[in-house]
Length: 191
Ligand SMILES: Nc1ncnc2c1ncn2[C@@H]1O[C@H](COP(=O)(O)OP(=O)(O)OP(=O)(O)O)[C@@H](O)[C@H]1O
Ligand SMILES: C[C@@](O)(CCOP(=O)(O)O)CC(=O)O
Image (cartoon, rainbow, N blue to C red; front, side):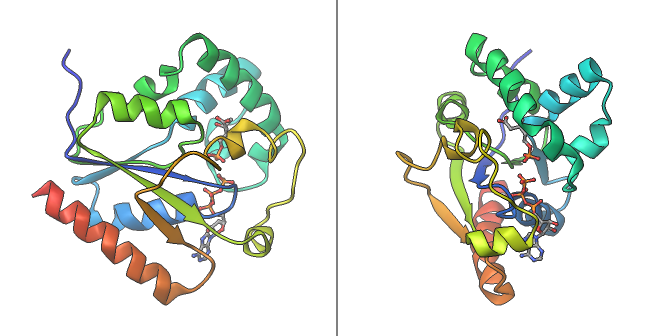
């Protein structure tokens, strides 16, 4: 089957509790589900991990504390899969996506970006979500060794010139302005 051909792919990344899900949900809501879908590289990972370990998949997907108990082990599990095949979760995540605008909400490693850049060289726009440690702490973040100092969180700290940056530090007006920029690009490209 031929690979799906979106018109625009936003490749989102950002630290834990920077607000990747919050920001990407807002964009999808504004564009509507027929125009835009959210793809999570962690969704197929969490689905398989939940099946293998008898866990609640929907809780692993949500923003609560449940997933944090398993995060370090999920990272290890996912890394063993990625080592065999760096595009493994990317290919699963795009399965069945037919909308013209895709948002990949959780890029974490250079190999994630590289896979999309190679497969979709014309369509990708990388977006970094940023929030201060203070704001992230208010949202429930707590430094965890083995997680916050590992590739899963630091893999894109250096060496990438992001096309866009979204400051999500709690200034609603500033966030709105930055969203407008991304929304106009999406509307322009999806015509
Ligand atoms: N601009 C904002 N205004 C109000 N609440 C926000 C904002 N941004 C994020 N939040 C809240 O902060 C929490 C963390 O945000 P979110 O789940 O989007 O972060 P994330 O980067 O996807 O985190 P993780 O990858 O660690 O799960 C959520 O409860 C979310 O609703
Ligand atoms: C295991 C992992 O996919 C968890 C991601 O969870 P979340 O996007 O923070 O909800 C992180 C990783 O792939 O290294």
